[in-house]
Length: 269
Picture: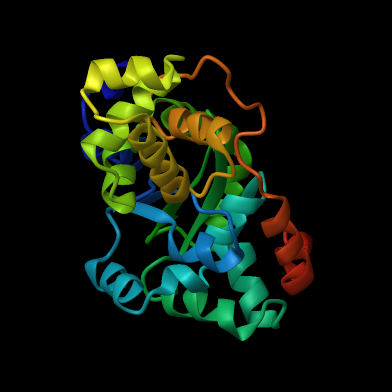
């Protein structure tokens, strides 16, 4: 982890980590994603940022082109539930009809490329994410037996990686936040007042500070300025604000939506 931490960008860190997982634990496929829009289940699934390594190009092209992220049960699991979901569980649920056809499409199409693995929900600094470790060689029975023996080690390594990962550039690209937005955000996180921020940035009017903060709030789907600062800190956009909101992400409405429309998820783990 010390070597991974030294790398400046997320892609290089993922490459090093995925290479290690393949060499030590036979996971030749790796996915890692984070979500930051929890206004609805649809928003969560469609705006979940995803990185991958080692997966078959044909499968990833289909996943992207056909927008399968919006139909992916594993994404829903890692974002809304804590714990582990085995790939074998998903396959069995799809075969038995436990999950709606809408969510069965992804595991049914993935069978040609992924034989086994697991999905893990992750929480760190208010950042909600998840990882999928996949094998194209181990059968589900082989994997699950191996996971029963060594899974706790792999899971701990994944959690450590999530602790040191930084999605800053990816979040900026996804939201369209500008350097001016980020500068105002950073100064506000330091506890500076509008007049102080204007003196530093050279903006002509105090209203411009509020406009920048409102744009950031909307882009991060936060409820107020306090939560905006906390979310921004969790996403790596700024350092930790002076008055962090302990409830970094409000998942209540989304959780209620899932309970109403997808109660079958609760029985899978």
